[in-house]
Every structure is written in C-alpha cells, then in structure tokens.
Image 1 (cartoon, rainbow, N blue to C red):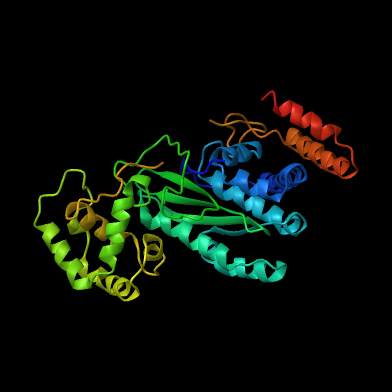
Image 2 (tube, one colour):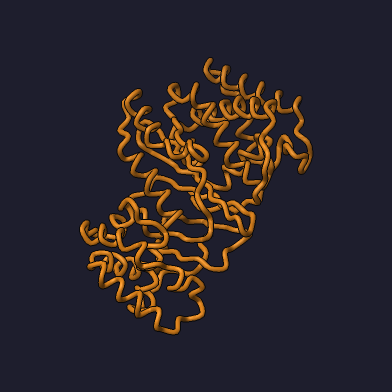
Length: 354
C-alpha cells in the first residue's frame, strides 16, 4: 500500500460535459467491480495510492498530467458515489475551494444518515489538511480536499495544493493512520522539488517536534526574546526564510493560546485552531538555530492510457471506445451478480499480462 505526493502542472479550463458524464458512469462501474471482487475497503486503499489514482484518471480520459485530473476525477467519483455509495458502503466528502471547507458538515450529515461515527473522520480531515499546509511548508497552498471512507471507518484523503510561482500543483494522498506527525507520507516520487522546504513531520525531525512542543508551552514573552536573539545572529545559508519574515507581534496571540493550552505532544499542538505556517515556522527556526534541533529541509515529495485525453494528448478521447468500455463493465457486473464469473476471470487474466 502506497501513499504519497504527485506533482502536476497547473492547467485551466473545465472538462467537457460529454466527457464528465461518461467519467461518472465509468467511475461507477469501476468502483462497483472493485467492491464485487475485493470489498469496499479496497476502493479506499486504491484511491490512497497516487499512482493508481493517476492511472484511474488516465483511464477515464482526462489529461494525463494536469492539475485538473485531481479535481475532475474526484468530482466524478463523488458524483458516482452519490448513487452507488449507500449500496456498496463507500462515501466521499469535500471538494474544491468553498466545498472543501464544508467537509466537516458533509461528514456529519453522512454519519447521521448511515449510522457512521463522523468524529474520527472529521479529525482526520482537519489533521491531514493541517499537516500538508502548515507542518510541511513546501510552497503549495491547499485548495482541494476530499476524504473517501467506508462504514467500517477506513479512510483516505486526497488533497491538492497550488504553487503560483512555479505553476505546478501538488497532490497529497493519505491512508488511515494512527500517527499524523511522524512521516505520514511514504513512497513519494516527484519530478519537481521545491528549493526550500520546512518539514516538521519527517522521521528525522523527531527532536525538532519535541523542542517545538516544549517551546509552545513557554510564555509568549520567552518566544519573543528567542526570536529577537535570532535576528542578531548570522543564520546558516540554508535558512532562506529568515527571522525578518516573521512578525512576533502578529503571532503573539497564538503563542498565548499554546501557552494556555499546554499541548502534551506535537500532534496536539498542530491541532490547535489558529496555529498556522508562520507560527510553526517561528518555533521551528528557534528549535534549529538556538537549540540545535532542526526540522527536515528536504522536499518529501509513469502513467497509462486507455481512452485518450481531453486535450488530445496522447490522442483524442475515442467516444465509441469509451462507451464500449462502460458497456463491457456494466455487463460483467450484471453477470457476476447472476453467478457467472467468466468475464471477471477473463479481466483478471488480462491484468496479469499488463
């Protein structure tokens, strides 16, 4: 099982209606077949894999490498699960922009309707977004967030950030974890790395997390003094985000909150509302320069085609072939429900020769 990060160039525009309608139907058939073959948990596990998700977007006919693959593929899946979800026990919440901020309300609504405990899902939604926007500072601002989950509580998060400077988007994948702050992403591959990153959840940043947590329990006045000391030091060259980028007066309020809260560990600290990238960066800088406990400054960050891509790369979408694929999957589902597994077995044999 892999979770990790994928980088994609920013592309504008929307999926044509004729394509998106087909994507919804094809997504429904693919998800239904996975559940028939392997169970609902397998849907979540596969969507947590950035490589499988990328391949799914390619099969569904979207751009092979654009940022729109994430938003359009998850949008098609969410639409498919509106009908299919209650039947197979798989649900999705969230989306792009304003819709992403309604994720907790969506989770609560689905939980109440189908008897699912929404609290762990809401916590997972909040913490994954906080880690990828504040604990990992790689220059990408999260603007798309979705969570897919089963009735049993297995979840995966797919979210995407935008970097206005390099015109790339970065997609983050998660699978259910008990530890949100110790190397939660694995199997990370990236064509483009950021020149400067602060990663406080890297495995090698454990000491930094401990020092940062201890600092957050100190009185705000002490943190202000420490920041003033840093301004008087000659910082190492690796610190491209210098103390002058941090205004102690603006972040004093959140440090008062951390002092009053007295978080017992880094995850509790990260969960405090209002603690953002600048506050965490200030604490990480103090931990590194004054206490010798640096975070990681290393960026933690292959495709197949079946029906073509909407922009004609590597070739235009073949609508007739697309519709035939839907018909084949639809017939296989119907026949599997009747006990005839030959077509599914044929598909499995074909998969062994990929």
